[in-house]
Image 1 (cartoon, helix red, strand yellow):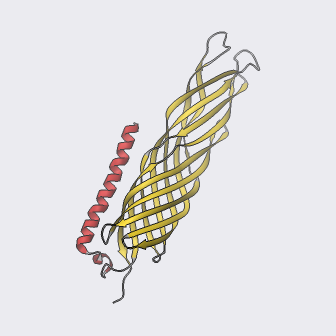
Image 2 (tube, helix red, strand yellow):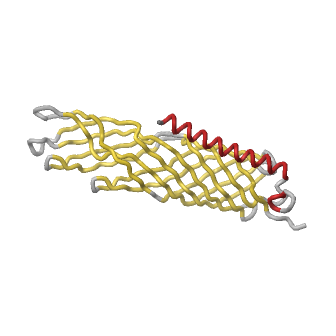
Image 3 (cartoon, one colour):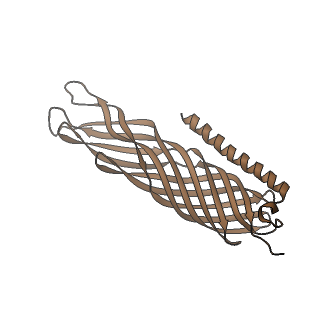
Amino acid sequence: MKNHNTSLHTVLTAGLLITLTTVVGAQDQQRVSDLTGGAPKGPSRIEIGAAFAQTLGASSFSSTQTVREYAEDGTLTSSYKVGKAPGAGFHVQYNLNKKFGIRVGGQTFSRKSDGTFSGKSPHPFFFNQQRSYSGTQNGLGFNESAFTLTAVLRGASGKWNFALDGGPAYFNVNATIAERATYTDTYPYDSVVFSSVATSKHKVNPIGLAMGVELGRELSDAVSVVVQGRYTGAKGSVEINGQRVDVKAGGVQARIGLRLIAARARVKS
């Protein structure tokens, strides 16, 4: 499944880039003026971008829950490490002038988390004789997407252009989280051996922050290739066994893609 998700993201990203390249070729032949009614010398007004994205590091979160068993409270401590993954990013940008713009963007990643678990299970016959256990379970689901609204500070020198942007991000996260541990024990039940965890999928929609820095190089009047370093992050909570578990989303990522000038400001003759 992991290889399937990676291939899917690669195909989607490649499709976006091929589509942009095709449109760019058509625009170069039509000299952009067909979009604006004027020569392609006015400042950029509307830009569209698509990019391949790669998370650069793992993120982590943890929780400790009380689990009721044999008329006594046990504990389950869970630590999750969300791994790196490829994904895709896109945006539409409206430029107010040569220095400032507003950008609406999105990103999507299909990641996996590895869990480390430990806890104490009550004895089935005796009170206050907790039995300790620990173990791991890998490949837990962690899918995330985010929509961003950022202010953009722009600049250019010759065929080179750069930008800084920052603003709020709205996340949609679907995370697989442990509810309780499963284990084996045999008479006289004084110890347990960890087997796995019983999990469930939970959706959380935290609001966080997005910011980035990018450098672009013009390939034609209508298109640039862009490299970008970006950070998005947020923290939300879900309820499991009547208790709150905080979930972290986002992280540092690198992007490379294309940006298309979809419209230019009209230039008075």
